[in-house]
Length: 413
Image (cartoon, rainbow, N blue to C red; front, side, top):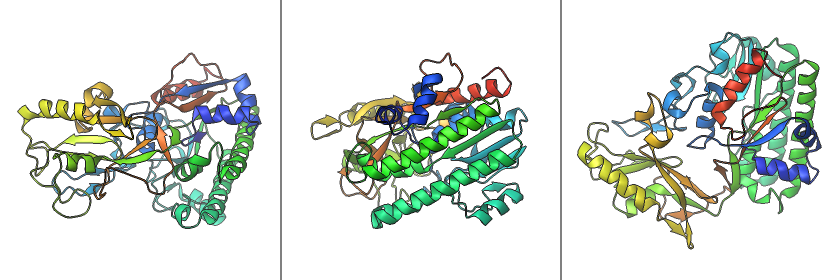
């Protein structure tokens, strides 16, 4: 069971508060660990690393969006962009895979696949067609209506619980009625709640919604764990990243503009980038050097690449907000990625300190600001629960695929 964006520290807190007694019982008999996400610590990258057991330099997904190197228009990698096979494809297992991000459009497999975010059309998101007939008939929801969070919070919460209810109904139906060796399902409503209202996760105006929501999640986890135990199956939950409240959003392309590295003359996004631009940022925190020969308008010569990258690395570390450093660490791609796709990754990756939500939008008038979001992803506070013993003491999300493989082969639980 995937629990999108559910931090280890939040689970521990809710167990202590008595909000999650079922998860507390499971943690007492199994193993609940803090887990590291991927870099970048976003769902498309992290869930892809989860399902392949590979890092972005191998599977090739570095974010929800890329750009066309000639036109600078945004492009959006999908399931067919993946350079590594998911764990369920590699061994011929009969599998049910429900609501994992970055699996759209659905590919045929030995079993059932229902794509997760970003899925635009339920029919294209579902394999085989008979499962689409079931889902459309029962009113399955691909995602919550996020616009309601700012426009009408009360309606957002109604929609959140309704969507969660449909998600749980579909998970139970497929679990009970499909044959499988491997069953994977993710709940993504957790992530949506956190993005818009994480400042109420421990106290505040909407804490009662968190309390109700997580009691419902807890009961469902308990039910699914009981089903797994009855079936002699191992049971595992994990998240793709953690969460923390936002102090300020940080618009990195605005910083690049104000410091003379990025020049835009017009257009949406980065389509107005000029030959005077030496670097640009893609969500959430990926810095690309505007290299000659690699990009249509790139002016930076290969001999200038390393000095410019080092210069940016040092200057970006110095960004501060109200006396606090924004950036915890700046990594080169060679330091964090490995594999044949590394060359396509960002030249620098920015890991922010907690509270500073880095953004790649190019149209902000200031470096700092706030929008409707109140929660941001964190790298080092994802969670992993296993009903069977694990030797891992410092797990990463890429490790989960090998755990799954061992379980399906019968060495656990």
